[in-house]
Image (cartoon, rainbow, N blue to C red; front, side, top):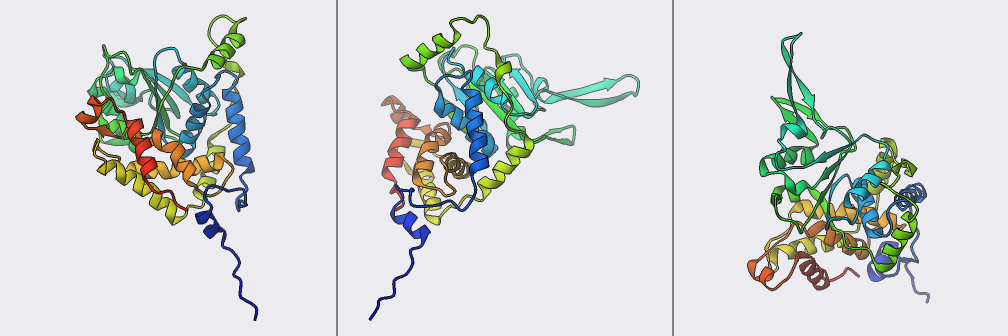
Length: 343
């Protein structure tokens, strides 16, 4: 008597063989999306040497529609990286240099009296753009920082009872120096939570620094950004985001993300854990990472790659943990190792 052998279910194979994805075929055509992403990387690499993870994370952030905070010591190309990446998107760009005397009106705008019409009209500030570079964001006081709360979360400005929506895409790329504390202000937790991710930039390796010197040994002055070509526009970005929405996510992967975020709230060394906003950020960023890797389904590796950058600025450690010399990245790594990986 012949046995009835059921055909294997691809989703079931994914559960039992999460580490090997070579047997699975995509149901979505990701070629146009991956081509655009590869062209983005190539344009950035014309000026930026090394920082491969940073470029991928900035691409992830803009596709996910989130804001990104770049942190690092002076001179490691935080501002340059943001400017180069902004050039690859065919949209409006503005730069705001934060200083201790900067006022909210300097960012969002103010009312101007029209002498001819004897009326006030709203003069829009530099925040009304598509890609906004905020340099040294931690140099402005809390009053000015609070002006960013509404626009970063709801993508609109309310002024004198009138709401002014921002045009899509709306991405804030901010930089800050963690070393110099004179003349700086700690960013409010509510504002930090509005950043999709925070990327800590490090010094280049010896080989990367040698390549930097070789590339610019015959050049003086600032890098020529005119060689950077725009790859994405509003229409292409929207098409890519529609593809991201179709990425397959199994319930086990949702549970995996939930368990990681939940563990940040129950960890003995964490005073304040990640919010539900962090869970959503983990999900959408992981989906983008999957597409960059050439897959139309999520695996644990995608979540593990973006988790440190999504969560590190959302955790407040206990005083005991800080005294022990621990930081949020160490805690996140410990949490990822402790949570069971879906099989």
